[in-house]
Amino acid sequence: MKKIKYYLNKYLTIASIITLIGAIIKIIMIYYLQIITDQIAINKLIESNIFIFITLILINALSVSLSSLFNDYYIETINQKIKNTIMDKIISSKPNKMNQYSPGDIISRLNNDIKKVTNLLYQIASIITKPIIFICAFTYMCFISPKLSIISIVLIPITFLIVTVLKKPLQKYSKEEMEIKSEINFSYKELTDGFFIMKTFNIMDNLLHNFNQLLDTLYLRQQKILKRKVIINPFFYIARVIPVILIPIYGGILVINKEISLGQLLAFTSLISYVTLPIEAIFNFIIEVDEVKPAINRLDELYLLESEIYDTTINKNKENQIQTTNQPIITITHLSYSYDHQNTILENINLSLRQNELLAIVGESGCGKSTLINILCGFLPYDQGSVEIAGNILKETSTINIRKLISYIPQNSKLYPTTIYENIHYGNMNATKEDIIKASKKAGAHDFIMSLENKYETEIVEGGRNLSGGQLQRIAIARALLKPAPILILDEPTASLDLESEQIIYDTINEIAQDKTIILITHKLKSIINFDCIAFMKDKKIKEYGTHLELMKQKKEYYQLFEKGGVTHD
Image (cartoon, rainbow, N blue to C red; front, side, top):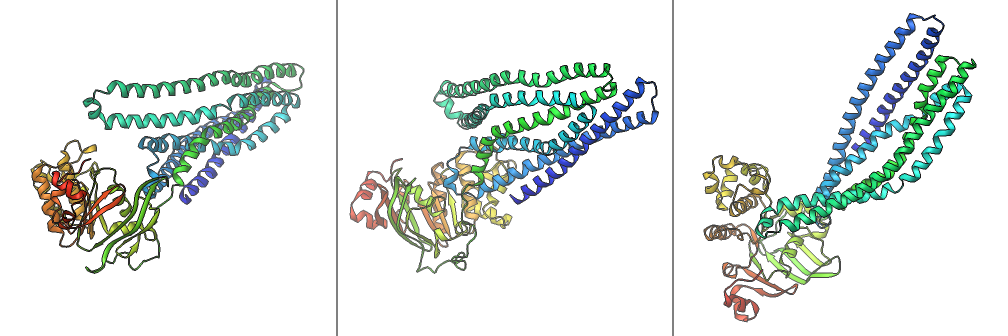
């Protein structure tokens, strides 16, 4: 925020000075217009005044151009700084906090809301100088004719007070409009991301109906705003027209009575806008602030997102240490987790895993397997108990350093719209090309990559549409294997693979088990019979724990599932 404040203060200072200089130039132009008009009226025009007047016009034109260029540059700079700051907060926030916001909502806030805020900033610089301009212009008007000044200053505030009252409901409609736009942005994403599902189940009409309902709701809100503006606009028109009509009429009478000159009347009518516009601008600014408040609040929500622990001195000397083989690398004691402290997902989980051991976690969907993994990776905060990784208490240690110890492959891995090489390289930015090829071979990805026209330089399009699901998963596995982490966690890594690719992955797991601690979530019990330990989960707890042979001897639920075919159900 310091950088934003620096640019904002700098912008407001320079923009205010430029605006003030521009206004002073215009008032001086009006003064010379008065002199020239009076000289023409008595046929005594001084040519030097014409030259000064033309020079002022050229200076004013240059001033307007530079002011516009400066405003555009700084407003865009501030826009980018706000986006960078908000994105930094989003990236550093706790994953469970970010789950509260849909992608469409985030996009709407980063685009629409920031634009509203920066547009308001554009007005602030002008507003700062308005009182000075008003005082200068009104003083000049009073010098010309106190009578005309009193008439002009009485008419304006009454109209603007009425407009202020009428515009109040716009704040409510503006907030509703922004919320609906967020939902529409989310619907855009849902329609495009789920395009093939939509076609498969023939639900185009349903989704389109829902989308059209949102558009209709937005249309009705915008119509309410429009109707309100239709009511308000005539008052704005009256505010501008009444002084323009009455003042020249009364001023003409004063000219006839020789109380003021024709040049003074022309100068006075030119100065009216320098009195009315500041008042109008201030009233509009107050209303605009009310309309932008929802946008500011929505951005403030993102800025105040709770950040993860990134820097701490607790266990500082242990964060990158790996325990000896005889000591646990992962220890979970009496762990419990509930969603919003209401719905219990995990209950009294106890687990100990030594370095280079293979642990399989099995159980039907909803038993808490993925939640346990999310806690280990620091994505979810646990309620009770203790989690230690390589001697570091999870709650007290930097999440960045904890994640250095863990390489995680979710069931549906995210790949970025760049080359295959870059996607794998993200696993370890210090890795060489040879390291990347080695990891790809271990993941069973190298052969298919080399069969592509551009090989490792093949661009992955957004959503990975130019590769199969199995190919995408093998690239993700290669990326995970490239990361020099002692712990490897895999959540159904073979779900999208054919039998041959699946066997390659399990062979890879057995190969790398020599120097990694591996945790595997799977539904295929027959693939884990050689694992060091198996945790069978049910009803939010670890019901059975031991080797395959130990669990089979117990002849409980694991035994029954294995005998039925060795596959748990989603």
